[in-house]
Length: 99
Image (cartoon, rainbow, N blue to C red; front, side, top):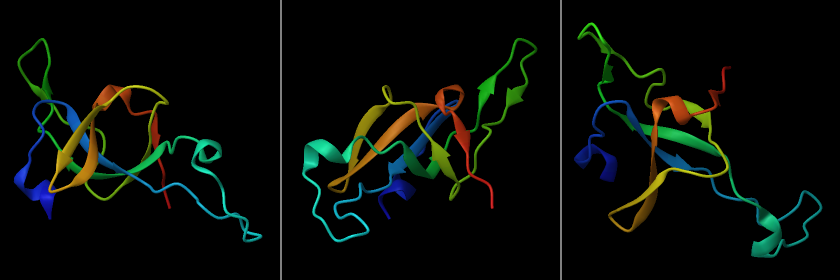
């Protein structure tokens, strides 16, 4: 997998956005404009964390494999092996889904 060749630095988190729904439950095809931006993603790699004022590493609050909620704007697009991923700072991630 591409993300094994890429390790985020500091408190950055590499995510893969979930795909947008292209068909409604009733079977109607949705045009791209009405699909909206997907704000859910899966964490694929995390950095070690940021260093606090005392010099201790504050670990990232999410783990690889967790599903997270992203802000509508922000993040840096990264293309790895022809696939789109996004880099966010740990503090920018709005929350994570729990089972």
